[in-house]
Amino acid sequence: GGAGGGRFLFYDYLATLYGGYVLGVDQYVPSDLKTRLYPKCRSAFSTLLEGDSLDEHVAAMVRIAAKGFKTLLILASDHTHDHVLSELRLYHDLVPAGCYIVVCDTTLAYQPSQAYYRERPWNRESNPHTAVQAFLKETDRFEVDWERSDKLLLTNCIGGFLKAVR
Image 1 (cartoon, rainbow, N blue to C red):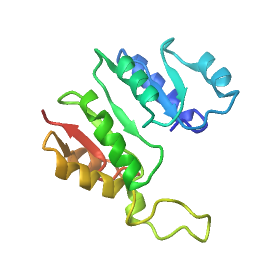
Image 2 (cartoon, rainbow, N blue to C red):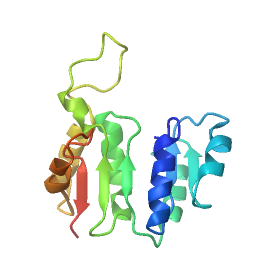
Image 3 (tube, rainbow, N blue to C red):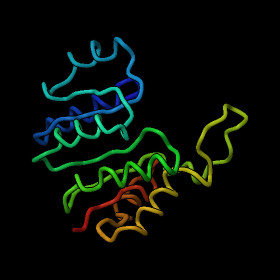
Image 4 (spheres, rainbow, N blue to C red):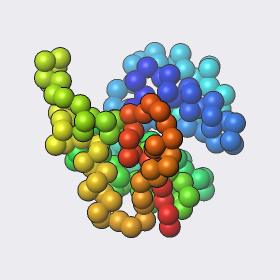
């Protein structure tokens, strides 16, 4: 997800330090967001796409952009079990050994219902954490990097740092 663009700019800054760029995908990109973000980007190649990460055209663009690069994949869009699991299945092969998929908002598995605030399609039974658990049962190519996860004193990605081990 791109939301307001702050995370996009943060990752753009980090990517340029290490010789890369950012490709962000969000279902909704406000019409003026790119105009506000791009002048602040350090990499001329960082791009924000509007669309569903599971859409075949978006997936094709992501695959083209990732070709030949070490990839850090960060999943932070639709937080339902089915959507996150589908993203993991669709994109896991872009992440080479030694690199990571970071699944955000796994802490939703531990939070009480938010129905009092507004109804959400995710809950304790359907969330990024449950998707990670299902994905790890399907593959032995990834494992949770608990050392990285536990090192962070504050994170919304508990158990969501998946390291490609082969």
